Structure formats: structure tokens, C-alpha cells
Figure 1: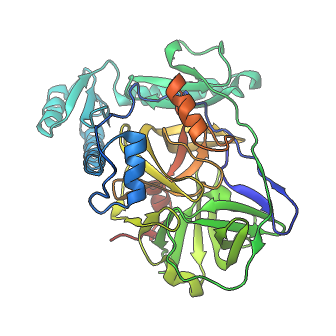
Figure 2: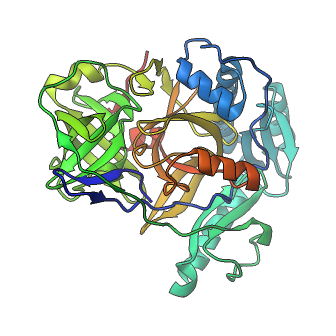
Figure 3: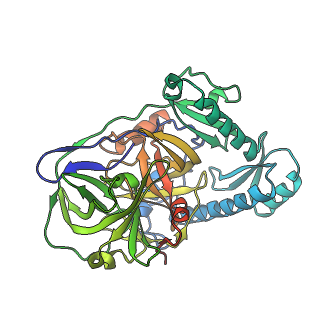
Length: 437
């Protein structure tokens, strides 16, 4: 379920239980791949760092300009969807970006259909006619969850998650094995078999070094959280400002090794290898259950290093965050992590429930991106906007991303990264803000 690296503070090797959150064949994966765009050597495009531009070229085969344009279109789609859900609830059936980066609005038959169509087309979106409204699909999702609550443990334990698959106008269900009984309104073609979570790697211990550093820290830089003899290796997420005006960083909840004791675990900058620096933060708040996030309270002596809006690869140039985004299916997204750096993909499911270890992550989104232990808590961006925090991976037990990426090309089963939306964190914590330009 989790993607930190776990360790002992001294010389004893340490072990983490890193779980596979979902099968490579995710239930709501779009039935298209990233659009190939012919390009020469990566050009550090409009205000984007070279490492991010290289990841866009490698993973999505699109230019920086196309990336920014699609990210902007996705937020226009999100704004339209919010209005349509309120104005046309009987016909609106979801919205997304297609493989060409074009906004698509799905409409079902019913009152207000012509007005909804006119509104969508006047905004420049393509309209797709479907059978079921989003309202109907939400009802089916709730009905499935009620059905599941009444099933024997032998059945319910094998269901990993459920999501509204707007692209296919259906409910999609993730299961551990084929042949499980399903209610008749579930399309058998949308019941996706996935592997159960698995344990992960053993790593050497961390050594706490004396002295400090002065370089700015932001999303994608590494840290170790220490409690007693145990430590977790994760990545910083988005820098922010707390309700009291204090300097904070938003990262993953599961990166706190002592969830029961707020403030007990200390946070240290990763210095490379097994070395970490002095304490620079504590966990002000950690949530792990339906949500997965932590708010780090930065020490006064280190606050200046976090008073920036950077997301980056450790030791390289940053992208400057300008605002907060809403997850949209088909939107281009890139994650930054201290272990694997920048990796890019497209969002393939939003507002979903997925079983991660012994908990259910709700309101999450997923994207076809590889992430490995140590990337947990890192920032996920779309364009120059803050989108999410890395939470769980379907390929966390692989040693390098090249292996699952190649397997994904050969089999069509791309890696999946599950994420905590930043918008939900901000909503749950009034007064909390992301640092922006």
C-alpha cells in the first residue's frame, strides 16, 4: 500500500511493507495511450525545468507547450463539469480529455439536454451521447457498496475498489480473482482482476549527520521521518502556509512512523545514500485511512528553505507552482519523487475508492505513472498547478521503473499511481494554503 523506505536509525538493516495498491490493469484506465507527438531533443520550454521537459518527451511524447495547453483545457473541463452537475443534473454524465487533448462532455437523455449540449459546444467541447447520467452512475456505485456490505467476508475481501468509469459510462470494479458474484447492473467487462498488495524491500539504516544545509527544499526532495529506532524515507510534497501563518509542507500520511503520537516523529533532510541531516520538521497532523496526508510543521531555523513554491528533482531546476488543480480524466500529470524523479502520464480515474492494504482510500485519483518506495508523499502537478500527493503504487515492488514500463508497453498493463488530491486536503484544513507565484 505504501511507498516509503523503512529503516533503523543505527546499523541494523530495516524493512518496509510496501503494498501493491492495484493491478496494472486498473478498472478505469482510458482505452487510449498518450498521444505521440514528433519532437527533437527536449527543449526546456516555457518556464519548465529541463528534467520535467525530458519526462514529458519520454513518457507522453508531447512538447512542453502541448502539456501546458492540455493541463489548462483540463481545468476548463473541470469548471464546466462543476457547473453542469448543478445546472443539468439529470443529463450530465461526466467530462474528460480525449487522446488528442480535446474536452469531451457526456450527456444522457433527459430534461435540459439541449441546453446542456449548447453550453458544452459553445465552450468548444465535443459532446458524446451516453445512456446513463452521472447521477444514475453514482446511484449504481452506492447500490454496489450496499450490496458489498451484505456479502460474506469471503467475497467482500476480494473486492479491491469501485469507481465511476465516465469514459465507458459504467461502474468499474477491481477484484482479486475472476468469477466473483456481481449484481446484475455491473457490466462483466468492467470487472477487472488485479493482484493483491505485496510486501517490499529491505534497506540499510540511516545515519543522522551533524550540521545543516542552506539550499531551498520543495516537492520531490527527500526526507526521513524518525521515531525511536524506525525511520521512513519519503519525499516532500507541496510547500504551504498553515492557518497560524507557520511554514508547512504537505506530504503523505503514511510517511509518519508514529501516527498515534502527534509530533513524536522528527523529519530530517535526506543527504544521499543513508545519510540524513538534523531535524527540520515535525508532523503537525497526519491522516491515514480514507485520506492519506500529513502536514509538516517546519522548524524555525529551516523555515527559510521552505518559503518557496518549487517542485523539482533533487538538485535540479524547479517548476514554480501557480495554483491548485482539480483531477480530470485524461489530463496530463507529472509526479516528482526523490527516488525516481519526474515521471508523467494521464489521469485515468477520479473520485475513486481503492483498497490499499487494510484501509480504503477514497476520493483518490490515479494515473499511469511509475513510482517506487521513497517517492511517497511527493508532489503531483498538472501544468504549473498543484494536483496531488503520491500515496500508493501498483508496481512498488519493482527495483526500477524501466521494468514495469516495458511490461506495460508489451502487455498494455501500465503502472498505476494512486494519489491524494491536494484540493481535499485544503478543504479539510481551513486556512491552509499552498505557496504559489
